[in-house]
Length: 221
Image (cartoon, rainbow, N blue to C red; front, side, top):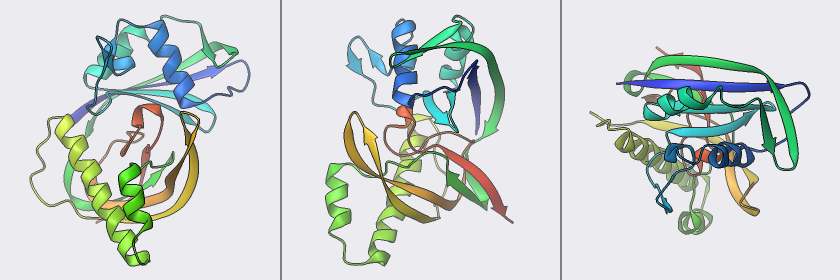
């Protein structure tokens, strides 16, 4: 299937120091009428795959909208001249825009991806299970199954019915990250799979806050 994506990058007169959650907070409070920007509807959390995702990539703020999220970003991207991240206010002097229709789903090729931002793969329960596994092979298999589960969950939210078996392998290392002022275990590195994912879409948990963004680096024919 094809996904419509709208990718927005921002540049200021000086280096932007901030986090993806702060970027999300700016858009969520500035444009409260758009539930897709903050994943809340009538004070209730929206649990489906986020259609608007916020990231800091090499120090540059990036916002990605998918399908309905792309339409929302089209409506708001030019309605501000500065952003506030934490206590700092940055004048925005350049807005880069990329609108694409991109393939998503099961593929007859193997594609290699890198995590541009750390992959938050495990909830608290699965973290305990992961730590209790005996060896590297068991942990690798656990992460492979987790990755497949991420892709299946993502597909379901995007109304894509996976027509066959997802195959994958992972090559990652543990890294500590911060989420809501709490230390969490994440993974950096990459993976390969017979599944097409547009660049900078997130997989795993807390993708709206910048985790799990992927970049395709190579294909195996």
